Length: 333
Image (cartoon, rainbow, N blue to C red; front, side, top):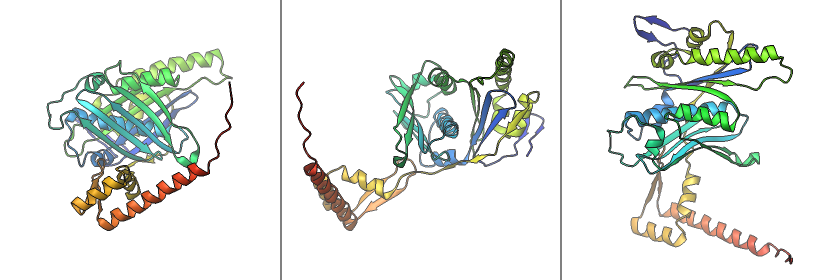
């Protein structure tokens, strides 16, 4: 695969592909990732129209969770989510099973198309940003959540600071969005300085430190046009041709919503049996739309009767379990 430059325009060799590549520098404790999202970003915005800066932010968040998920041995979902009282009320980007993406942005005023570029903290107002690991139930692992400081202007800078302070990994992260209006995409480039080998000599440690400064300086020279349009082989060669680099096999990424009728059943059960019965008596049909993918789940009277029966069964089982549980012995302190 290759990319060629004609005048000031680039012709990329990886059109219409959602893919992530790891890369590593030979004999250096430095790793990297390159990711590009196009189709999954289009699917994530198929049912909602966002102002351009918000659209680009969603793309960056999706690229970020794809890279985080790829870097850890973990069965479950990685999420990056925010909550605040500014123009951007809530946001969520999720990568499930290291491959499947979905995301959404909730705006204070969905009809406000005049939202412009501004620091992330200003978009959120009085808010917070969190990176979470949500393991599959079968894994037996506990969920993890870490808060990302909003003291920097861009998402990339905020995440760089997070990895340094929370993971003790020096990190260099760049995002670029393509200018195409017909098929917008986002590309991410990440470098991380890994811990030195316990057997590393002072000379090797000094060489790795110097290489880290050199590589991050070179990465910062990539223009948005180069980053958003060049394929990874061409980009890495253009930036790091004096430093032997190995590009690893790609990981395909795609959009996939995790909504299901089972989850929608649970949502309806939360209304309670009486309210749910009253609602179906009034409307004859209940519809629940997934806010991520737009999938619609419809329930007629037969469908609601099944949900009510399942709710009654679960309630009875919970009551029986509570009755069968022996009282814990009381102790005095």
